[in-house]
Image (tube, rainbow, N blue to C red; front, side, top):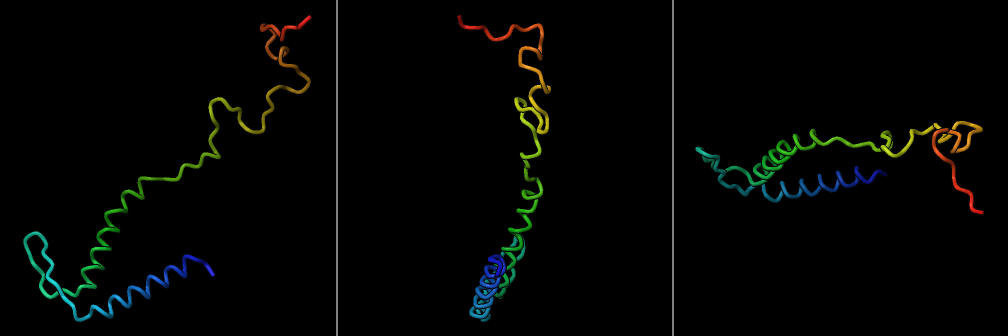
Length: 104
């Protein structure tokens, strides 16, 4: 069974118990110029959660996954190409450069 589903069900059960125990509890919620009286506690918590979720959405839209497997580093040749053409040695690739020195 998927773990996300189990976690979601546990959170829903917790929320149901919280709402059930706080049906009779109420509070006053003050918003800048107006005060709402006798607001159920579970409703104020739910609205605060929704407000926090809405405030975090722009941050998640701005961040995208960087898939580094598609990019090639500057010092790395693209995959599928060999470093040298077939049958060539390193000194033959650039004829103007001297080859390795031989030790006598």
